[in-house]
Amino acid sequence: MTFTELARPIFERAIADYHVTDHVDTPRPQPYPAGTIEADLYQKCWIDTVQWHFEDIIRDPQIDPAEALVLKRRIDKSNQDRTDLVETIDSYFYTRFRNIQPHPDATINTESPAWAIDRLSILALKIWHMREQVERTDASAEHRATCQKKLDVLLEQQKDLSTAIDQLLADIEAGRKWMKVYKQMKMYNDPTTNPVLYGKKQ
Image (cartoon, rainbow, N blue to C red):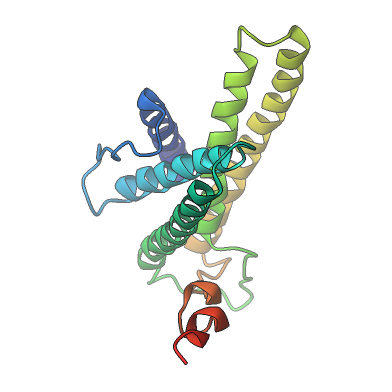
């Protein structure tokens, strides 16, 4: 089994589990043992799914401005949780490949494995919601046909991205690629680097 063959069903389960209640305050289930990569993948997609619906809600033109500000803070927190979890997943890969000696001519990838998997999680969400549009009984045939074409593209993209991720992991394991990770440095979340935050302390 390739890594993406492991990840995709977990992402699909997280999305389906969320939509049982379809509410952003639904407590996250824990169907996998804590500390496993399966649990991290499930949590990653759960965060993405909740944030997807945050983004839907905040685009309501009738939303109360005070509620919108509270929701913006929740989106910011969700983004940080997402980043932290991507780094946790990269740590899993870093540990997994720590004894691999890269070839002298090994190359670096444009992104780490976990950031590519982040895109695969988001893609699973796009597929779920586009399929929902295709199956709408209250929409026009034209709308459903348009969404079917988009769904076909998303499914092709999922296949291509899965292949690329599995190839990247195989290249790292074979020493053809470097396993190199840079921690994210989001300065606006740091009270020591965001002038608005550290300025208020002066």
